[in-house]
Length: 342
Image 1: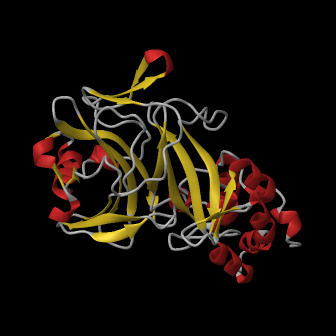
Image 2: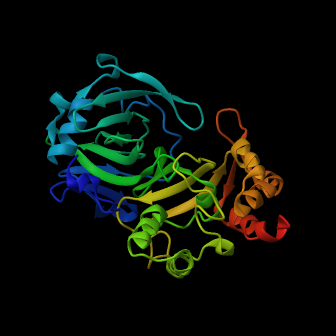
Image 3: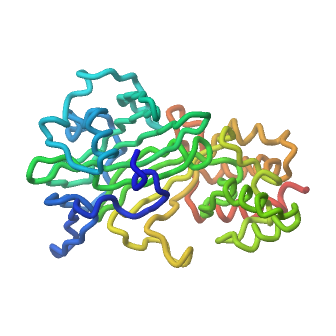
């Protein structure tokens, strides 16, 4: 992948491309892809589905690689094909809706492409929200959210690229649904630490490694982590110490709304964010299993499961997971330390 594609950034890709969203009163704003207009109306679209009319034809794996590696557009006739024309396996959304998954392997990377489907409501031109995962060797699988767009001149290019994370560390990010004014909703994996601190975005593994290279002892590391966290870490529980945060330690998901126009939709954090955490999904079984953890924060999270269940909506294909809206979850979270008796 190109350096631009791999860079951790929330900005839009490729200045030569522009996606235009029509808002109320025919006011136009631009986010990325030449000569394309997504005319967005009101109302939240339904959950992403593999074949909803927008992706009867989809960008092929070869086309996706060309767009991302060369940072260029590809003629639609050379880019689009039915999923039956290339090798796929069946994947499933969080709610159990099936969709096609393609896999690619080169000398430099392995790529998994999730054709999760869905579209912005009232779009005038075709576009394809995609979720991909990349492995460059080793155990890491790094997740990205894409929107590819067909222009009026018949080219398909990258309209939006959003890096996510690695496996349980904010990875396995997948589009869920889409609404007006360039807002897309997606879910990403969460560790116990991230569930307790759902508004935190810091890569604590990288931060901890940097402090180790600087020769800081454990107490100096703790002080710096607590001082730099924005927002502050709940109960001063640190990742890897009081709360598990490993890349294989999934305990739920964070539900996020991302604005593709760059509009600030969550003020007061980092000077304002163009995305907003809407809520969390607790994996009931994974959280319950934390009751025997060696980490105090994990045990307190497990102890709050009954209160969380009382405030939650069923989630997942069998309804066993627990979705809780952001404000209600933060209220429950704020009582975890006192409620677990540790």
